Image (cartoon, rainbow over all chains, first blue to last red; front, side, top):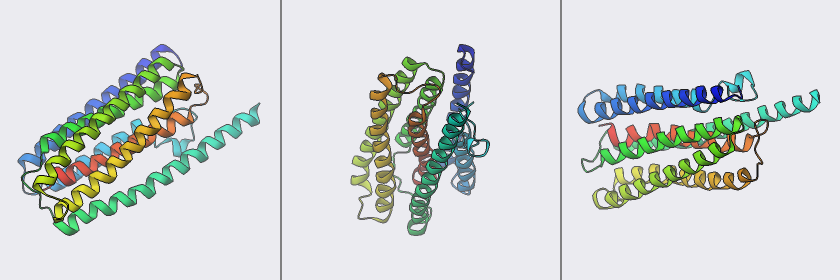
Length: 72
Length: 185
């Protein structure tokens, strides 16, 4: 995993996750500014999904269980 | 040699658990502040709140998480120049986020001062979060000095991992603060 292709693959994953987070944020903004009744439920779901993406892909929360050395 | 590796792995596991416990305890703190918003104000939101600015600084913070992730990925593979560059990008984005919060505060003092219910919650939440961003910026700046001397290697980069994880944690907290303050109504 210490090759150039491995680095590119990991960086590409980061960009993909970031794209997903921005997309969720745009949906969240749309829900928050356009839906005035019951929008809080959608906002809560979007916040939980977004935070899970960060916790899993950026913070590597799975390391706590697997005990892996690096973040592959 | 095997026992040294095992010792290092064990130490890394302990470090990680300790850091996640800190995140958990800090989450309770922010959780209490978030609950306070609903307890004091329900879902009331002032019409003067600048939602576009809130969205913009959210995007900046998310982008800083990407650069922080790239920095950690780079150092894990011995790419020190890429690591340093991404730490600098992350710091700049963090400063931009702080500037955005400062702008929002200047508007907030006019429209919903801290003496009002929503103002109390708004300034407490954004203030404590900005303090976390500020401490993160200090930590990122510290990373650059030992990083320049080649201190972090693919086999030993816990210092980077811990600080980058802290930065992501601050991002996760904002993912809940933004809809709570700016969008729920």
